Image 1 (cartoon, rainbow, N blue to C red):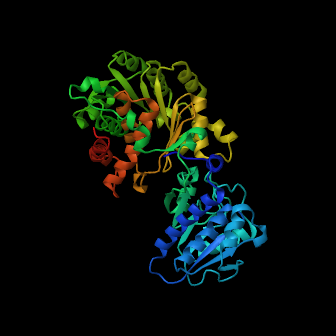
Image 2 (tube, one colour):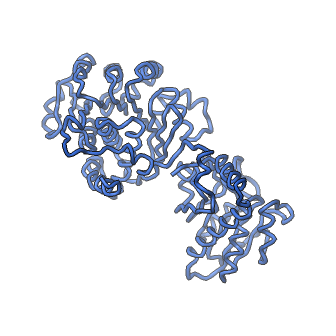
Image 3 (tube, helix red, strand yellow):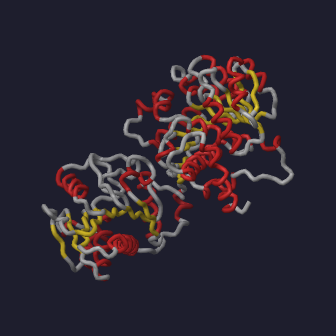
Length: 499
């Protein structure tokens, strides 16, 4: 599940070549993988395959694919954006091996095509697409013909996932060895269609030299950290999570988080409620306890109970000094802490107050869970100084500046640690974007913290469970459904992990 930058992928190629695999052999394997996908996509449909090839190795992959398709009886033509004598190295070898048609871009070039193979640019594109290349991408998108992209849709920056002026909208994409950030981050991911990762003969041991620090968030990345229940365990051995509630007009968010924490495995969960909201919270809760907590001093006193080992502050708690004080109380108690929503916004005018506290209380396991707006408010200096950075880079910078785990929410959620580790979650369905879903996520994470899971892993597992649970329930999901759908997902994990 490693995710490689374009520079790291180039190193993987070079390391494989240094170990004895020729560059052209890698190109042949890549081209065959593209041809296999193209044959499947064409199926029984009639029409030729148009391979749009650029001057680099991506175009060389396209030439190999054309040769493979022709050898299997599929009519193919290469639309080359440069003169043949411009091609160098392995791409030139692949072009010389092609015995079919090579034509220049022209009007009507995609008429009668069953498939377009986009081999124009590779993942390393870092300039704005203009001129003839832009017109060619526009023509591909306007053709109405299914498009198979080689490595990454042309026009997408492989590292930042940015659209460089214009980009191909693929039906499917075939990439090689490992995914790039743009396969997982937006907006690039929305251009990729269905993604296939092809084995082209690079030994996975090259990763020992590259040492990637970015991974796709999946069970294989945190299997060892996933909590195991013991037959002789009890509720106190599974931890006690506390969720801070807002006032009487905004109690629902805390209850959603509390329900999420209980479903995620915390042995006990308590809602710390202002007195004026105590009756509302108590009437709506059963297995979850309620305790009167009005001030930060009350909260500090509550946290003297060492059995309480995880806290959520922020959902529905209100923006202001009272929420800020309770967040600081949780951090100073050296517990596992999830700061979400209003807790983050409460520090937007003084983020260094929060960051200094986080770096001083290093025993606390703190996770910040901002969405785009909250991130912009809390990390405004990073946003202002990092124009053009990807979401992955921004999350890493935020984790380093704050000293906390940062879970930067969205359809491409990024979890980053101060030491540089990062995971990208890409399993959230569109119907997860619903009111209260983030509150449940905070609860899921707190439930894992309560069971002793380390902060980075708790955030990663929680984010994956969040997306998977939404998929389990399906369209029509509301936030209350997430905790109720979680047991089915956990059952599958338990079976997969043989627990």
